[in-house]
Image (tube, rainbow, N blue to C red; front, side, top):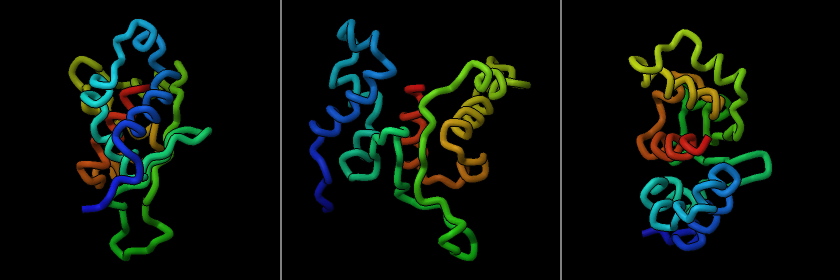
Length: 143
């Protein structure tokens, strides 16, 4: 079994620092506890512990557990890392929602939102492994 790069406690602390930027009210009211972080972001915690997720100045950067490779296995065309946008401007939100009935097309909205935040196109998102998809989805829920 591979030894974690950082302990669970350190991973929670690292994620807490990041979450405080976006969930100030929950932290201020004492609603965002370590147990809640573990419940809501288990894959994110695992990715931090395994050294696959780093919170850089430009935003989070995830190294995929299962890289998206082309049929020819061309390394230059594959996707190995995902850099996240950490802000969705109102005009961008409007473009993401354009043409979507949010009450009946939630899956389509989630796909467009994930695509915007990660810079991946929908076919790349379809090719993500389950753990990578869940990690990305949990992290995107912050924004």
